[in-house]
Length: 377
Image (cartoon, rainbow, N blue to C red; front, side):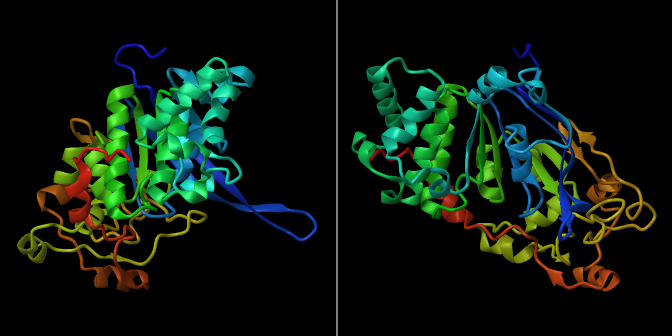
């Protein structure tokens, strides 16, 4: 069990590399995709860790590696003080019961041939929980009530529900085994903005009621800010910044995080008009051939050739709980270094100018509904 003061989940030097194979008759490995490349993070019991970054940065792969849905190449995942990679057989089965996942696409993660009653009772039977048939039936109805669905949903199939209702079913299935850790991979990205708020409210309510610990993987910065205690920012397989949610949004220190935050709309049109949008040059480099030195230097407006091109920055603490992986974070924060324009950066790299990979967020509509009570249907 986790001792007092120890995190529930610790990820240490985690690497997930996928081999690139070529050949007609005999496959040979010609390289590796470095999806996750040396990530360290810790999540305290009962808290929410938000992991953000643009598509392809490795955040979903990290979540799957924690659950051993993909096998890590190197590093450790410690859950409640136990190395998950060392578990086999029944010990692994028991550990997985305590760690569950809510997937991005609820329709794709629910068996279309099973009705809701079967979907929710199957994990209970598989793990020998809920007692006999009557006990399982009672537990299934409790799960439906917990996520705000009527008992009439029991005999219906996934395709008969809306996207938000399907995600509620996925959440009900994930909490059916009473886990300690819930990994939510883009839990609201496929939903309408109004429905997103309902699902976020549901996750918060369940956390308070059941004492859950969350790892929320998302690209929607408004959702992550609302639900998270600590936020980590990933870029090209690495963690570039981590801080308490308020500190990260109030004063982002890494150039990439600054660019992401500048893409979030501000409700006040006067402030929105005055603030500067940071545009990045080029596209996300290939994880099969990441840049040398700082991986962000090919797109960074504050790039300095003396260190950025050839020296890998380490994740270091600049303020209590605020970690950043940048050689020049203090100088950027204090204004001693001024950014170059995206056009200047693009000219040095021979690439085009583009906005950050995080899509524009309809934050007004979302935030208005975040604190509303869950609608029971």
